[in-house]
Length: 327
Image (cartoon, rainbow, N blue to C red):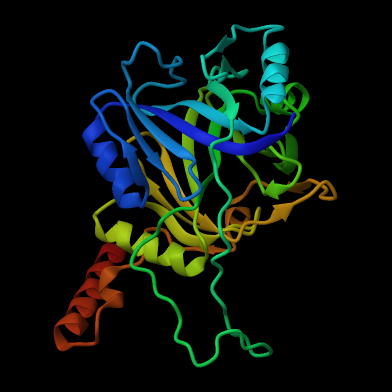
């Protein structure tokens, strides 16, 4: 089966207004809005769908509270949809919408759906960069972003009771591909043979429960990632961790707590894999998580012009930090 990646993520949420404001600030385009359904889109057309968590037609929640209720995967043809329907109908309930979208659940109870992809191909907007050996940008200032406008939904991460069971379901039943392993603790999986490092990452939960960790949104480059994070932090959204850079996937990241469940992530510059890639084994440890990272964003006063007032504010903050460290 030929998968294109994540076409949509459907949330069931407690506070529609709060979540609408969050994803608007995040840089997504609002496609439609109503009391029971709001749809946002990235630049390639992949969607975030917000529904009230009590909606009767939503798949069953994997955890209490606001969370992801369904991931919609894109395929390239009607024949792919028929193959998915036939395979999953062997051992679970499958329903099909009038437009051909196939709905089911995976092996830890998460809603999954499959449709002809609605994503569009993005134009190459990479901005030139200069190095010591190569000047790509000549007599031209750099481009500065005011905020981020994510290009696509890259991946979703879940804590699950049994990573082996999920690896088997997605690779053997659907034909997804393992990219890398956190030895004994997690598995990174991609939908297409050729594409970004992973679309799913399953971490084995310590208590046997299931939960959403985060949903990740690609941006063009490091400049847009920093602009997006600074803008979003300035809108008073809480940083979960970042910015920083991962070892596994090589991607730069910045995470924020999300009222729809878990966190959301800006990322860029992830590894692109093909059939020639051999999955690696990574030891699950703090030093494996990132090459470097900042724990709680970038302090705004460090970005202010060097006036006397701003200098005094920095000195005061340093004194407070030292006092807190002494107890």
